[in-house]
Length: 340
Image: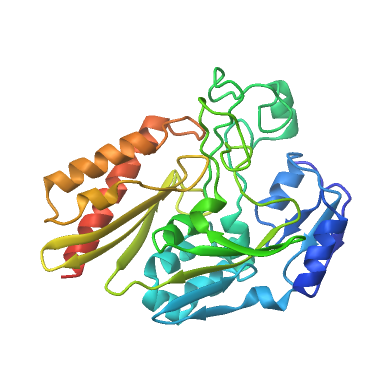
């Protein structure tokens, strides 16, 4: 890695000052823990002249959690989230996801907002500047071709790898967003637009691995919210090459409800596979009966249809998709058997 270039750090103390700073410096980057951003700066992937630190904004550090509702500020650290008693007790998938991101040092610094808005990754993108230059760069930087899929006609397949998103997606979470035009709230699923479809152009609502967030210029995520559904049980698991300081090959969150011997609700979401975190469409059709071979066959079919098999990591894409299905099956079996 190269030495850090010169940049200015702006440290607002209020949310209004943060939004004003974003407006004054439209090409700036937000700095929370910096565990991903600073690495990318040292690799020459991004070179912002101004960083706006979010940690001084007190309103972004709050956690409000009980048996009914959850609200987490964007500057809350992963360590604090993982250790919060109410999160552990009522939102176990989220607590487990936060507790197993990278290593202790990264969790002490990394923030909820940073993990939700994590830059997409690819073996052709997350490299040193000289390596990227020797390989003619890629579509996500200044190149003209996606090296993962050279015939993709201008579509980038870099992968989203944040751990918190799938755990929150199965809870039907929403995000509060603030910007120059005011505040708005949207479903968390709508924040991610990295659909990477070759049969449609990249737009403000349908992007790819390069354009993967629905944030407008100057906007920031301030809070993520969710409601606790009675009797809904959740869990998160992932596979990674090393057990610490490593992004997931795939991560899976499952939430389900069991009524007697009947699977009455099933939600499954993934990270590390597509340019966006994916909550599977169609799982409601698997509910209403026993947890049997029909459910697992249907789950496997949904994974094959909606989870990508592109080689954006050092593991083969087809392996990642297969592992995603296996992890989902295991979590469904475990949660169903544990909660009668």
